[in-house]
Image: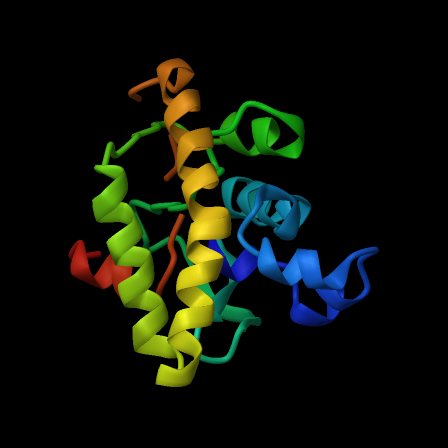
Length: 169
C-alpha cells in the first residue's frame, strides 16, 4: 500500500506542511481513492498497473507494478486497508478475505526503525527514530483498537514486486 502515499509535493501544499511530513503514514497522508480505483479495475478488468514506493526515494513510482490475470492471489498489505471509516471502509469491503497479523508493538517498532536505517543516511537516523515515536506508536494503537472488529477472513494487495514471486505465483 506504500505506493499510495501522497507525494511529498502534495504534503508541501497542505495547510501545515511540516506536520504533514512528520505525520506521513497517517491515514490522511495516503490516496485511498486511487487505491480503491485500482482495486475496482483489478476486480472488473482482471489487470491493473499500481504504484510502488521506494523509501530511499521518498515518493511513489506511478504504474510500476503490473498485476494481471496470471496472478491467482493478490495480497494487499497495509496499515489501514481494514479500517471501517471514510474511503477506507470502501476499500475494506473490496476484499474476499481479510487477515490481521497481530505483532508485538515493540517488535513492530523495531522493524520500522530497521527499515528507516536501511534507507536513509546515518545522520538522519535520529530524525527517523523521533518521527517513529511521534507517529507510529499511535498508528499501531489505532490498528490494535480496530482489530476487535476486523473479520478473520478478501482480496489481500502487493507492496513489492517480489511478494507474488515469494508466494510462488
